[in-house]
Length: 551
View (tube, rainbow, N blue to C red):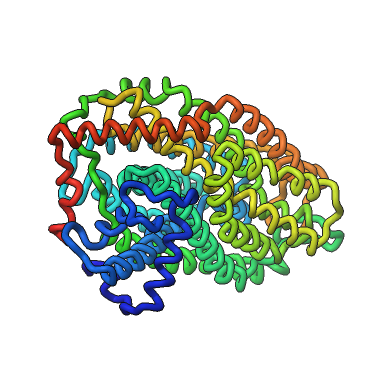
């Protein structure tokens, strides 16, 4: 398996399509970079498939088409994996039947542990030495099979009810740790596939688009399999939710077991796809080493790396803004299923509503990529994230209406697309700015990415803990056909008013973010001057093609 490009038929029609796609998603400004072939498409994609040496035009086109398929594979492989976090709350409460307080402990401790491991894994990766496979790829290779096993066991309901909390807490923490060993190097690959800012932005847009597609695929697989075996809600003759009576014990228990088996089946299907896509990632991606990195790198302790990263002003301001906006969107995401079921009354529609949001996000990420190249990234942040506010207000003030809810879902997907794309597009700019101020502190990219993931997961853990505890205090009833008025009010606050307030705070913090388009262009010129100076001094970057000889 030297590459998927060998399995793709070479043809002029396909070549034109792939070239147009790459040109459209290349540099939004239309200005060729020093590493481009003059038409706006980057030659840096070619070594990913072919390594060094002269190649013909047909081979270049075929190689780029191969890169499209490899990108799809690596995005789906990451996006399918964490389906437990996306369905965690309703699964623990209504399928595994964990009490709300224990569920809040599982979710909060699991996310807190996950956030804690991110900086440690990032530091360990930054200390890793270069191998024939690169610095990042060995982490991905060894974490994938173990993550698959832990992922499958998360969806298994043990027969010992007294130990359920410990079971889910153990395997949730293990799974999140292994996914961190996958996610941090995977995210940091953005900094190792090109030195051009525009190419990194294009790769980020491409990556996030297919990541959302992977989310849609995972949601569809789980939703369709589980949706065929819906467990009934429990209801008294007067309409209130109660414990099982002897008359319906057998039916409800059998239905619940079928639902649990359906979740296991969905986990098996998703895990299989995860393995296939991880193999594509491993075989299809190669890191490029920065020239003279080995000569410039200084030994760095964990605390020194932490101090350097967290003392960089633009980075702190960026993560502070996205901490609040991420918390807002995670509150909506974490409570969306319960909100649709109990507040809006669309018990059988929330999977389709979620698909509408994610499909809308998928199709609008390329639009946001064009927008940020045309008007700048800070403007894209203000317009993209604030666009969610009027639709959240509409959901809060209108009576339940399915058509209106679908319209709001599609519109909300536009804002979700901005929230997906912009953080990862702005982070490489911060790292470039850091390298200009600390030119001898190389290899810090995984630390930057891991701390950003840390704060994102910290926000996720806080949102889950607040949500589940709030529902517990409001009197949430497991598997109830309806919920008390206090629960519905709590869900409305968690999905509408609270996220709006957090978004406004985040947008105010973005006013302090100093890297605008002018500074970004200045940094680009300064970095290129440093690279030219390093090249003229006789440094070599031949290590960047080590893997080409292997493949």
